[in-house]
Structure formats: C-alpha cells, structure tokens
Image (cartoon, rainbow, N blue to C red; front, side):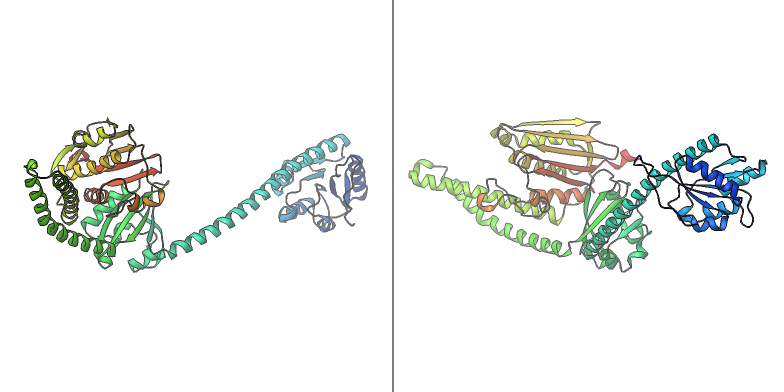
Length: 504
C-alpha cells in the first residue's frame, strides 16, 4: 500500500494521518472505517513488515494489533522506537491480551496506550484524540527544542569565532597574560607568558602560579595582589629567573573569585627612569649653588629698598620671585630623586591616617581658602591605622589632596573618606573639578607627565607627585586606583595593608 497524501477536512486544518496495522483484514478495514469516520486520513498495512515500509515522520498515530504472524505488534513497536526519525510517533495497541505481564511488556517496548478487542467506537475515538493531543504537545516541544538547538549552535559558532579571534589577539600581544582560578592555579595563558617562562602553554595550565615564583619579594608581592577580590591592583616586580626583567603586574579580579594578570615588561623604562633620576640629581645639585647666590644677593639688596631706584626695586623683586619659583622646582626634583633612589623600609610607626589627613589639609589651607573650597574628612569604621613612615604617608596624602584642590573649581568641594576594612585601610579623595580625559589615565603615573598641554597650562608642577606616590604605595604593597570623567571630577583610591599585628 502506498502512502496517501494529506488532505484538508474542509475547515483549513490538515487531517491527521493514522497508520493501522492488523493481519486480519476484516479487523483492519473495520478499524480503518471507524478512524476515517473520525475525519482522519487512514493508511492500512496488513503486516508489520509492510507497516515498516509505510512508516515515516508524517504520521501522527499508529494503531497496531498485538498478535500478528512473523513480526508481532511488540517487535514492530520496538523497531519503531529504535528508529530515530519515527521514534516519537504515539502507538495504540489493539489486543485481546489482558494478562498483567502483557501490559507490562507493552509499556516496556514503548506502547503509549491500548484498547481491547472488540473495539468500541466511542472508546477508540477518545483514545485517538488523547494520543493526538499528546503528540501535538510533543511536536511543539520538539519544534522549540530544534529552535533552541539552532540558536545554541549559531551562538556557539559565533562565540567560538570570537574566542578564536580573542586568542589570536592575546597570542599576538607582547604583554603577558595569565588567568588564575580562585586557588591561584593557572587556567590559561598567552604565548608571550609561555615564552618568558620557557614552557608551552598547555604545560602551564593547572600549575600553581607560586611554582613560577622565586624569593620572598615575589611570593609576598603576588600574595598581596591576589588577596584583593574587589579592586584592581598593580605592582612592579623584578624577576631574576627571567633574565632580571622588571614587569608591571596588574591583577584584575574576576567574577569566579580568580584573577587575570597582565604583565608588561618595563625593564627599559625603569633603566631610563634610573638614568633620568641620576641626571636630575646632578642637575638639581648643580642648580642649587647659583640659585642660592641669586636668591641670597637679591634678598640682601632688598633689605635696604630706599637706596635703590624704583625700577631697580621692581627688577630685584621679579628676580627674587623667579628665584623662588626655581627653588620650588629644584626642591621637587631633589625630592623625586630622593624618593626614587632610596625610600628605605616602610615599617616604623603606627600612624592614624585621619590625623595625618587633618595635618596635610592644614598645610594646604592657603590654597584651599584661595579657591573658597569646602574640604571634608570623614572616617568609616574603626581608627584607620597604617604601619609606616610619617614622611612616606604624608607625601602620598599631600600629593593627592593637593591635586584635588588644584584642579577643583572655585567654591567647589572635596570629600575625603577613610575606610577601615578587615585587612586594609582605604583613603578615598573625590573632587568635582576638571577631571582627566580617558586618553590620559593610562599615563598619569609616568614621571613628568602633564594632563594639561604646555602651551595652555594653568597649574604649576613638574608632574612628579603621582609618580612618587605610586612608588611609595608599591613599597607598602598597597594599590592606587584613579577614576575620572572629563569635566565631572576625579576619585583617587589608595589601599594600604593594616599593621600585621592586627591580622594575627
């Protein structure tokens, strides 16, 4: 028997296609006539073998006799269920068997429902409608699953393409990249890191990062970086095992409590900075001697201003004023050289940062009052105590607070907040002034770097303050983060470890 095409029932709804299988022709045609009377399309098969030739995925239902010669109804249904493209078609078995073991067998092979002979018309119609509704629901689920599978396949392909591009970019980077899980185990690297380690990328996966570190400074440095799960931290470190190269290590926390490390080789930059520091040291000391003469003699001559003509007094005043500005520049250069060359060890005293912040603000009161600024200092939590040298911490706070005042608008405000957390203390300085354009943020800690253009500068300074501050903060195994919006202000956050005795 050949399959019969779908036909409409006149309502615009396609007729359901039902395959009936029975070796007894009178029963076959009787059930077929009943089903056709329910307004379904009927396909007849007088054996299981013939039925298997007619079964396709266009069928909506199979009604099969249980007892047939050769392949019986149970084996027929088992074969259907093992064939993927037709396995979903519901089956009603028509049988005279009523034993419990036969019903169990029917369920095991995948028969959905059964009806006993002789077939009752009303019961048959009810069971057919039930199976067709079940199939419609299953068809909707399968259709939705196919859509999801297609969408997942499409998204997976796009994701894999993106990952391949990202991997190509990462492997093409000169900077080293390392991904660590929450236990500081390497989960991925780029080729630059593998090359500097002298290993292949696959062998690095699953290795604890500490296995690649040597010496107490590296172990303590990485421990400090990876202990921060809420902010990005940065530190410069020297690696003797990699040819005494110096890297700037940036640790960014991930959502899985791991970290992404970006390591930039700054060996040449450090060497250039050291040469520059030596040059500035020589230059500053050589400038000091003639500067002392200019300042000294001009001040002596101004001790008796009445003996000088008016224009001479004016000229001497300008000379003395210029000498004062030059003296400030020389002092800043010498301070930079001093901090850069030898800052000593941080441990010395327990220092309250709120008290120190009050003192720093006192030293900046003239600048603050000149701009009519409102500067507030608040403390969140216990006393903000840090272990270190007073001059180190004073320098950090002074540079940051001075910049906030310097770049604030007249009659504006600056908020300073000190937060004591379980393992560290945060100093947060927020102003609402000019802000820093995004393109400058990556270079803000470079020595002599100025955000303002030289031709339009309105503020004094050599651009050394943040360079000094960052170097001191690194000495304390702390971190500094600057967030700014051009025209809306800047927030500087400094995080410093609490005294070790408080950790114990």
